[in-house]
Image (cartoon, rainbow, N blue to C red; front, side, top):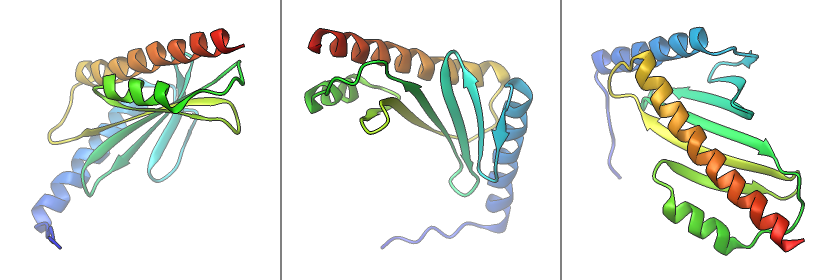
Length: 142
């Protein structure tokens, strides 16, 4: 097993990077709730949770949207979607009828507001495209 021991300076750098990014995001979005690791809001009709990990450092986008159709969706559809996906992964929670999308981004250096929205909007665009595909698939299955 490989052990990654970080220097004190690297630990401080990563924490600062995570804290700075989180503060910027909180100033840019209308945050409705937050805890020690995450902020939550609604963005472009998706529930959005952004989590931060200062150890790695990571910024994780989690998006969810309620599905109107309860038709069963075959695993092949998700396999195809996830093979096409460049940024993240797609799934559906059939128990509550909810589409989910998750993307993880490394924070190797500070990002600008423009770069943050570029990342976020590309994730949302991909989630919206596949949400629409799932909706059309469910309508055809009825």
